[in-house]
Image (cartoon, rainbow, N blue to C red; front, side, top):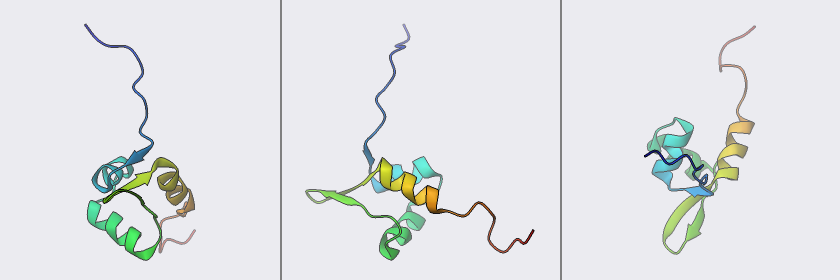
Length: 70
């Protein structure tokens, strides 16, 4: 039998899962964190990235492809 109940959306992701959720590599996400573009939070010794932080980063991205002029 299929469970038709909606699954709760994550409030935060691990770095690996955040990278997968945004379609980028974990290595690129690590670079963004190091640059301060994405700010993780800490739960004991584990970094987590809130969904709002990922959305803010995505919202800050340009609409046009870099290097392309209209």
